[in-house]
Length: 144
Image (tube, rainbow, N blue to C red; front, side, top):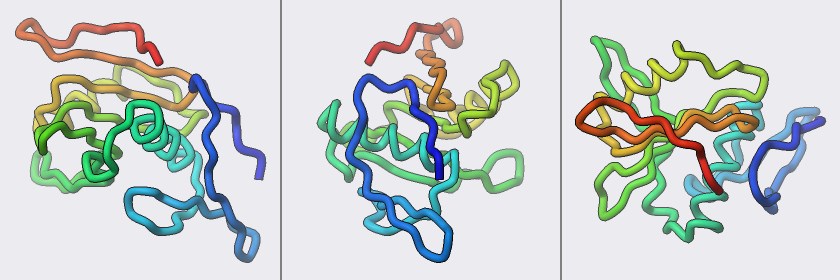
């Protein structure tokens, strides 16, 4: 499997294995092997970034949390918490998915339930960072 090089400051040491022509990646947070999809490749980069570069405890990283939105159940990709409070909502897309106003609005709707101060929308190649203020979202350049 040819994995794209993503736009992150450093490479990370991922555990990857194959089984019957399928690739799996080890998830540090859930302590299990997951099917390595393009979206999972992006999510695992963010997990490694927050754990190894930002020195966040694995317990502060919440993955695929269910939320209720307009009567339907959705799952958020990654929530970074601080003292159990939501701090950063990270929505991951596969590298070939364009980040558009529509995908940002989806992330903002999820955050209307979660209540994080900051959101990151990423396809691994491009990262959109926005901070919630009293006037709405303020977009910022993401700096590693």
